[in-house]
Length: 434
View 1 (cartoon, rainbow, N blue to C red):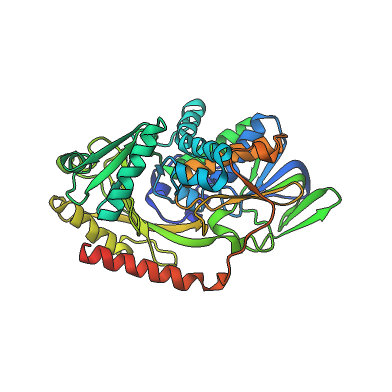
View 2: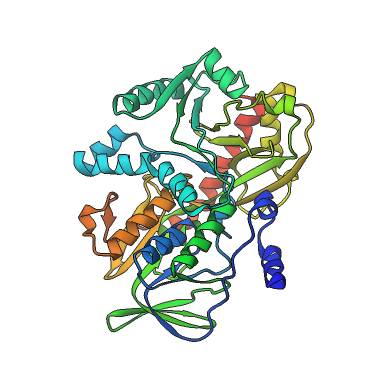
């Protein structure tokens, strides 16, 4: 067992989380053929939450993960558990109607509560801290939008507090921002620890998870779906595709429905206490409500984690994130020359409309992907919705819209050009301090 755990450590991408998260659970590769009620492809938050909620309903579920649970963006993201969708509740209602729109807003706004409730219920060791999320603005246009959005959210009963001037400066330790909105529902986790905790809980509830098991093809066999892997085939009544930013060609055209982008994080050694207490002193997390998003937080050891869009290839050194390091000094001139110990990145999935997409492209097939930077809370929550659907809830009664036809992005093959241009633009903006 010890050798197996050490081997999996070596296969993980290098990151701070790989060194600090709880131990992985045993997820041996598939050997031979088997039958299940549900087969889930993908062992990130969506797949693990689906498996957990199905197993809690005593549904026979098997997860196939190409590497190990949490290997992808689920185990490499900023660890921010943020409420809501990219769009404000009013806009959601305009697009989807009053009934569904309100349910979508309630689902996404309450998604962090679901995460922290699971952490407490299942006693997941993942450095969970529900201390709040700050949305901050430094441009006049974003500040105007944020003020209006905060008023609208408070009118709907959301626990949101608007801060400007000295208040936002005290809350962040930075003089960069015009204003900010503190949402008490948000917080943070060690995301790899959280993913491993979900995997452990799913297994304890009766789910089977096979790591190092790459799904290479899917075919219809009568009323069932058969997923072939190098070590065997799983045949099941239901198929769930939960691969998000690492979606490949397993299901035709699914990959073309999202734009995979790289988000990177750079982390310091633990900060001296006199510096740490001046940065986000309330223990909150923060993301900038601007055209190019930067996000940051302190972890339980007072390491500063700074994140933002990165170059479109795997990066594993703090030297690869000099723009984020420079921006840190722009925010907090008192920070000095810190020792940056880790830098890494991973792929997340964007959709053109910035909503998560829940598809049923064939009978008893569900695909869910495209969390647009809100994957910790929303992917966990969507796993619960998928489980409800498989357990018999009609599609129209789910709290997210179900799309029957995939929606491939036109000229999808050109996405790297556009993303690279946006990343370059963001780096220039940070460099000149705009």
